[in-house]
Figure 1 (cartoon, rainbow, N blue to C red):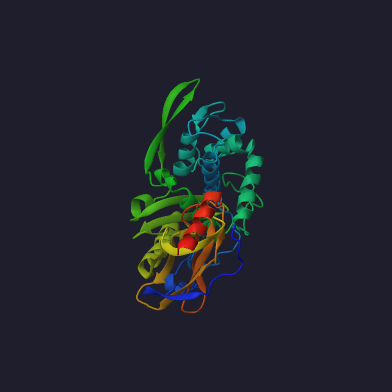
Figure 2 (figure 1 turned 90 degrees about the vertical axis):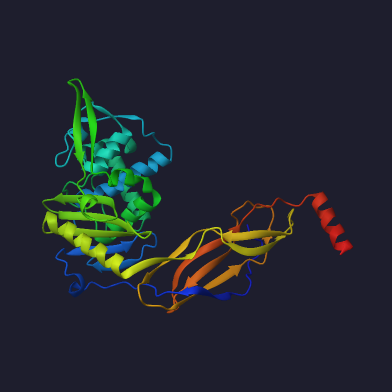
Length: 390
């Protein structure tokens, strides 16, 4: 931990390029003329909202619910709670799910990876509940995990009642919240693209009746229709009508377009494409700072080294509107010193990026590039000797 509370004087540095920070676009149907009652367009890496219309309206989310189910699957697998090769047994309850399904049978076993593939590609309710029971002990237990995760992400419009999105009283979300959990999934687990960009695949049912192959077709038609599509999830029920969380990437910028309660199947895809076209046509992502950029040296107190080199902890990007240029400034702050011992990655300051309007639009910690051990007797002797010689 740093031994000093005081920081050196703020240095205002002009960024070498000029940009205009994107401001949130208010709902205006004269711009996009969308018929869906609730939509949002978000840039994935920054979370910047480019367009929204009634984005906090609570509505039934249908199978877009499964974005949270998928997120928790990947999160638990990453944490070592299970392996993709683990065999998972289908319960009577999971097999009884109606709606979109892959017709799993009670006591049938499938690999966790195969069930996840069924959820992502084919929006299979039976596979979603099977994985929910496997991870949560029961669907109810998993739903609690879903709501806890939603709360931690700030999804204040959302209450989950089941793991698959079938119409149930009180099961609601919003375009805003769906964009948040979509962002979390695609930025933390980009490997989900293996399935979200797959148009067709198969699984093999292995039951007492023998082995049969079952075809999977992606419910997201944008995989075939829209250039740069990376995902993500469709949903439709009688109450929810037609929903979609569509993700696409061009020129290293990934956008999330969420459509809620569209009147028909075709319009949800058309309106998602309108939103994505609007985003790609009007905005671009500019790198403000690269991870591991050198930031200077900081003195070390009671350490085996007198100074430690510091670097930026993260990449920082800003969303800018094409064709409009303004200056961004950065405020760089370094601690006066660090007290040994400490490991590489010890916080040593921060850089904050400021828009022309004076708003913070990004920041990153400055951290030590190396660790420094506490000074030994030999280190102290050498330092004393060096000072004496000088």
